[in-house]
Image (cartoon, rainbow, N blue to C red; front, side, top):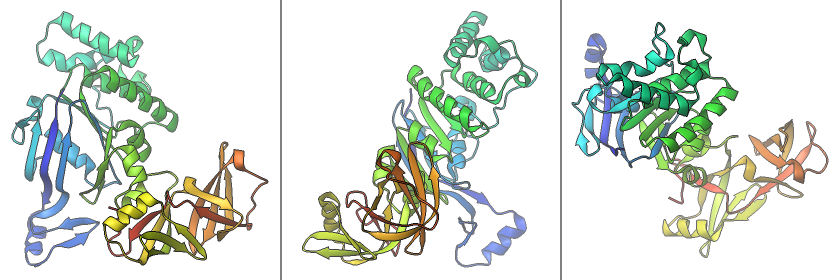
Length: 390
């Protein structure tokens, strides 16, 4: 129901008295706890630019302290924007109060009123708008039916499970039919089984209500399954914006490559060789030609032979008769596959072997050889860690 646009949005938390004075004596910015510290203060979000389409589901993902929740709170109006512009439906809302932005927010800790019933919690915001009683009841019952909590409407929050409380918190938000729905790690307090169930419920929910979603999480599985596009953040900076498939198949840099995907991508010190328009990666005695598509992108960028960090995902790493040798440390049976933890080239490497392809078993200390296809190899700069293809 609304577009959202963030233009060069920045958030700086000012220094307090004594700290601020001491900082002014320093001439250059410094780094501390991975966030930039300047004379102005601690920079939590730096030059954030994003255009969100109507009804799009955007996920902000990254490690703790990367600035994702701060960004969400600036959209909500709970944090003041230090610099930049925020538009909702084309209207500049930097100075607009949270209650007038037509947004709703679901918090990590549910934030339900303990003395009210489920019905009263969901109806509260509508009563503040002085809507007719019949209309309030209609909206609450519709939301309760969508979230399958009709039978709990007379209960108080203490009588509900964590998953049920989160459904109520979501219901309280959707009864308002907001233009933008904001969700700040809403599933992080739930156990793994409930998280999976609620993730599926949120996917169903976004198909039933016409609104724009901005969802914050540190869980890359949630990001990959929920988002139309993912915004990956680190230390206040946007690292990459793209569809789940784009950030998985074409990571912009070493951080994104290591953050997206489970188990994490394997990394090696390797050499990239350019020969007559073709590109090869050399790892130990193994030499693999990169795919024509990758070679074309590298050639267009004018990439020359150099030392690189090679990245290959565990599911793209194949056990073979010949290849890079490694010693098996642990073999984890995962049902449909075996995860081999191997020491090779001085690094810990994970190889996923589908059980349908398994011949025999692996034991600690066994020597295995692995290889990979030139279509799935990623090469990153040793200097600035960016993907050399982009």
